Every structure is written in structure tokens, then in C-alpha cells.
Image (cartoon, rainbow, N blue to C red; front, top):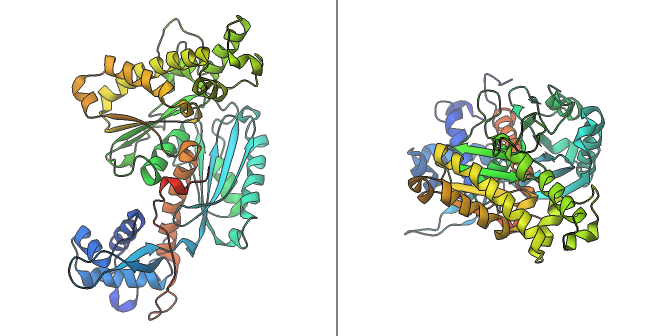
Length: 437
């Protein structure tokens, strides 16, 4: 619930410090990688310096913003730089994959403080998986004193279509038993904090936009190649989900009408032709056929993964390189249609299979060049995502931060009207080299 009277706003400044302006000022401070001055904020928003100073004073008094260092002078005194106070709270980000879960604890600048990752099988269903995930959340919260009390919000990514307003998945091919399960309610009930649930590829797009290779891009597509294949879309600066959350399900575009069966019930889907499971299965068949490959060291059992294929390809294994070349051509064919339809400025290739680098990206680019309209292709860059396995979980962190700041703006009382908090801080968008490896 939003209070009728915002406690952050002083009585004599109610007409000046309205909520939209506070949101805008805080948003600019969050986005500034090197901090931002009051003058720069006023220029960006087209409001007076006095208005900005009044808003900034309330944010500093409430502990959300700190003054740290000085900016570059353009004549006169060097301006004081404003940054988010990273110690004003904590958020949790969760990336639930088909075969793993990654949980992180982050500060209010999005810096990962602690993490936990375990293998598991999402096909075991929510009743078995969610308590296990809950244990990992407790594990990262237990790494820092008072983290539970400072927790403000939880972001969750899942490998299926999500009805975001309800916090649940809808008919997810890779998540048997999860359809309509109240995932959001599980986390909210256990930790009594807001929880936000979204598709893993959508959050990968958001993570790269907020912290990685997509910074400054209003229109981008993030292709996540893991067990399956998904696409997160950022259009005109907003995540695009579609009517029921199925936008970007590029993995279920038909590549071959006579292709192998897909878990969605169709045949010849991109995911069934080039997803992680498909790549691993083709590698097993190559081993059984007696082809000379270093993958034979793994045997042809289910423990062989697409990531093993990617690593072998990087090490020069010819069979693995051919498998990724074939997968890349299929992905590029589907991606060409997406580029023709939506004309994104940037396409980022992520997920664990993308660790193969140019061995996978080059056939993708070649297929796109062969099948895309020239005008569309000239405006589109195809690059490897920057955040690696952290893209989705940092997207979950970003959503949790949005929720946390909205809550803090409306409910956190100012400490004093005169005290200005001193201290350090990091920019909201951490450089890539700050992400743990």
C-alpha cells in the first residue's frame, strides 16, 4: 500500500518534491556509472537546480543517496558527485535453470556480495525444487550479519513463459508440474518481502542492459542458449512480454517440419534442433557412431552436456566444432526472421553454450547475413553477451532493485533534516569486471 502522505517529503516542500520527480532523480543517479552532479540532473530533467537540490537533500537524509568525490569542472568549482548508497539495503536474485539454480545476495548498487549455486532437476516439480532453492537463499543470507533484516526484495528468473502480474509460469515446456504454480507466493510467504518472477531470457536482456553489454541500447534482443533457447526483448527501453508472457519464445520457431520432436509437442523447433539438450544428444550419437572426438572421454551417457561440447570445440575438437556450426546456422536462420520483424540495434548471444565464442557466433552471423534484409542487418550488431552465467541473475537483481527503491521512496522516513550522510558507494551499473567469476 502507498501512504497518502509520503514521510520522506518535508511539509514545507510538498509542492516541490513530488513523487515523479523523486523517481526521475533517483533513476538518473542509479544509471550514472561514474556518479552524477546536481547540475547534470537538473539539465537532464529540465528542472531548476533548486528543485533538484531539494529532492537530493531528502534522498540523502533518508540514507538512499550519498555524496562521494568530485566530478569534472567545466569552469568554477568541481561539482559534488551523487551515488546510490550501497549499504541502504539488500536484495536477492535467483536464476532457476532446468538443471541448476544460482542465488546471489546484492547491495543496492547491484554488486554481488555472496552467491550459491547447486545442480538440480527442475522436472522434479515445485514441491521438491522450491524448498531446495529456499535453502540456498538462506545460505547466502546467512553469509552476512543482519542480511535477513535488511532484505528488501527478491527477483526470480525461470525457464518458461511467465504471467508476470501473477508471478507464475504458463504451460512451460521445460518445467513439467509447474504450470500455474504460485512461485511468487512461495518466496513472499517465506521471507515477507516483495518477490518478482520473470522469464530467464527476459531477465538476461534486462541484466545486460543494466550491467553489461547492452548499456545505452533501447532496442535489444538477448538470445539465451542453455538447455533450451529463449529470447528476451527490450523494445523502446521496456521489456516486451506480449499478452500472456510468451513473447520471445524463439526456441519454438519451426526450423524443419520434418525435424525431431520438441517438448512443446511440435516438431522441428529451433530448441529441438540447436538447444543444449539437442547439441548434447547429437554429441552422444557421434560417440556411438565411432567418430574420433575428445568427447568420447565423457562416454555417451547423460552426463555429457552442451557445455562439454563448447569447451571441446574451443580446444580444437573437430566434431564439437561441427556440432556448434550446425547449431549456429539453425539459430541464425531463426534470428534473421526476428531481425527482419523487430529491427533491434543489438543482439546478444548468451547462455552457457555461448562460452564457445566465435565458434558459435560466426555461423550465426553468416546465417543472419544470408537471410536478413540488408537494411535491417546494417543497423544490427550481433555480439556475445558480457555477463556470462550472471546475466539472468543480475536481471533478477535489477527487478528487485526497482521494487526496493519504490518501496524505500514511499516508506522510508528521513533520518534528520540537517544531517548529510557521508560515505562510499559504487555506481548502480557495475563494470563487467566487478562480476565474480
